[in-house]
Image (cartoon, rainbow, N blue to C red):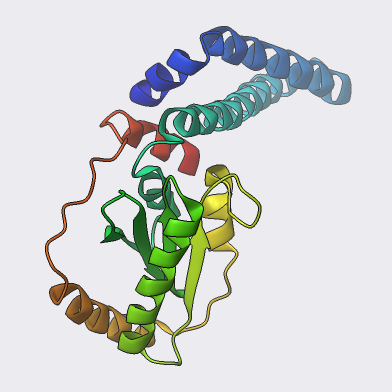
Length: 221
């Protein structure tokens, strides 16, 4: 949380004041409502204090999470490897492999494997070049996993038809579950065989500093 706060403060210098004001306002409003509804007895006052503090803490935490999310995207957007950093937010049930496909122009394809099947995410300076790289990687994966496993491609960018980086995680999570856990395990073995046949292509250095781990945790709650 400390790392997430420091990161957020770099892009939102007033974050401390905003969070403090949010806590005070929410606590005061909830306390006022509680006293109006429950009265001023000893038990009522105790319930009012507990309720107001918990409500204020929850509201402040939610607000901080949203501010931390904006700060994270502000730091990584437009940099090489940004999509891979954001995909880490998918959490349990997903296996992320950054840079499964890279060309000389440093356009990159990342891979996420989950109950939705194989999801290939492309990012690069040229959307047309990245799209061609995505198509190539999709064909390789389709040949390896078979016709029954969905292979979905997502192009990250601001152009028409592309998915903006801040909406990437939401887009992936909306994909329907198409395979069973057993099929997912079997697919992972096939994917490992595909990766073993790849030449060792170094992935360009990504934008994710160590401090971003705290921001990701904060955004996941």
